[in-house]
Image (tube, rainbow, N blue to C red; front, side, top):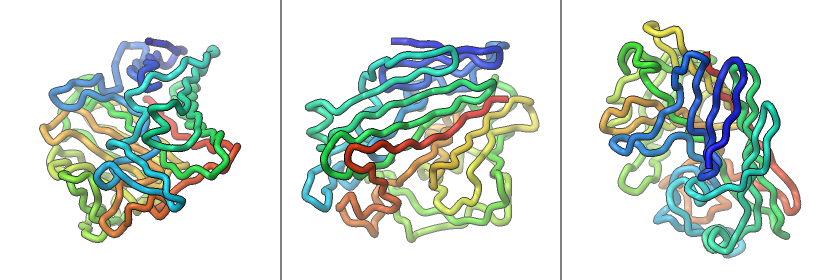
Amino acid sequence: MKYYLENEYLSLTFDSLGGTLTSIKNPLGIEFLWQGDKQYWSGQSPVLFPICGSIRDDHAITQDGKQLHMPRHGIVRKKEFEYVGQEWNYIVFSIMTNDELYEAFPYKFKLLIKYTLIKNEIRVDYIIENFGEQDMPFFIGGHPGFNCPIDQQGKYEDYHIKFEKEETCTIPTPITKSGLIDINKRHSLLNQQKILPLKHELFEEDAIILDQLQSRKVTLASSKSHHKVTVDYKDFPYLILWSSQNHGPFIAIEPWLGLSTCLDESDIFDEKRNIQYVKSLRTNTYSYSIIID
């Protein structure tokens, strides 16, 4: 079911299927969010939980012997969320453990997603509640895709990603066939740079996995357009940039808490890099923002 929020700056549309954003428009009717085209990518802004990316052969095990069976990006992105309610500037969706979800991820949780519209900013809060008696390991992440070019102004190669800080970093190698990461096979991407020019060739192998950034804010912009999109991801250590290998006219800017299983990692879920825990009967909250100009 569709739901809506708007103010004088932006009009937003949501879908209870996936509890996700499906449209971001300014007063001129310009659409900033990728609208999903199966020729390139049918998604728009899925929620990744309780994994980001892939685990080896879709399987992992916890230290206390729980078996996890999850496809890429987890178990909620194609599920129906409950509409909790809304006020003039926010809307909330939720999903709880049921028999199907428990079979894949044997923990008792409730995930709430709150979208708050503050002028031209969309704040996304992920609120994870643990109703079980054991601490729950997990990751969560966003996967918003944005039209590129924006409003068909210019071409893809006119756009760039601007980083908050000057960056020097290498990036690991994604393994497309398995969805895993060779974290130790790396190549240079940025060398004292704030600007990454976009070109489709960047994504011929797969996503760009930025695991060494100082920046916690990036902007999609072009000299050919006065429109831009900023993603502020202060709660998230990893940023993924992705577009389809067949030159899709979009760029996904994805804040993640964790990464796909790396070749140097075992299948023990608790031993993954940056594994998060929400303690028994407690709640964790993580936030990021999308700013539209």
